Amino acid sequence: MSQQQWTTVDEYFSALLAPEDEVLDAALRDSAAAGLPEINVTPNEGKLLHLLAQIQGARRILEIGTLGGYSTIWLGRALPADGRLVSLEAEPANAEVARGNLARAGLAGIAEVRVGPARDSLSQLVADGAEPFDLVFIDADKSNNPHYLEAALQLTRPGSVIVGDNVVRGGEIADSESTKPTIQGLRRFLELTAEHPRLSATAVQTVGRKGYDGFSLARVVA
Ligand code: SAH
Ligand code: DHB
Ligand code: MG
Image 1 (tube, helix red, strand yellow):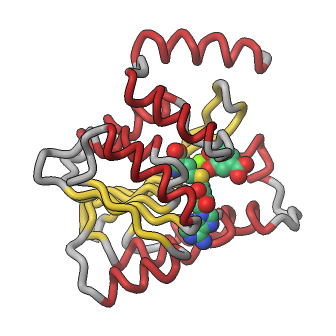
Image 2: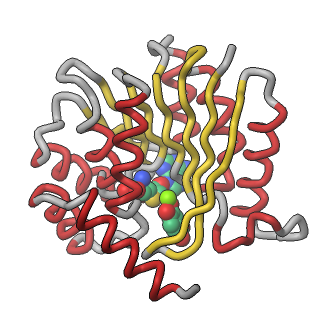
């Protein structure tokens, strides 16, 4: 099994099941033109997030880590016209690109990008007594994932879903000796998820054009 095979099958699935339209293409074009790193979810992963949100019947979505808003568009398109999406982004320049991409997608009235360290924005949402979110997508600086999980638990309700991106990282996740803050943060996040009495969770390994990685999926049960 090789990266080339994973990419070929990913491209087959994407073309068949998650074809990109002009709006998604343009979002990636503008992201690249602005010098953003190409670490957005793939089309097929975007479609998975979109379907999860719809299966969940989500009306309110929280995203941690916006980049250029590519995943935000897939998620935002799963919402009803009166739905709400809040996406948190530390870099003002990224947020600016994302806002342009969301406006082009016709999602400016539904999706809002809040600029600043996500930990601060999450504290603010809690302090404001924000209505619970039905789905949370965690995809920012992975070292802070334990904190994001705690915040997500304060901002959800029984039945909400918490999705974590990049929990495999080419298999490094299984290295208990890793000194990388990213891996340590992801491992702590998964341990907290596993032991939390309010959560029921699993994790899925994925391969595709972005290599070998995966998602965690948790349901808030109480
Ligand atoms: N979800 C996006 C990809 C996000 S990449 C997609 O799939 O299209 C991760 C993003 O998290 C980057 O834009 C980065 O600037 C942002 N980020 C990193 N640390 C952060 C922090 N502490 N608070 C908020 N955003 C952060
Ligand atoms: C990286 C971050 C991501 O969110 C991702 O999906 C892939 C790669 C990274 O920082 O390398
Ligand atoms: Mg990611």
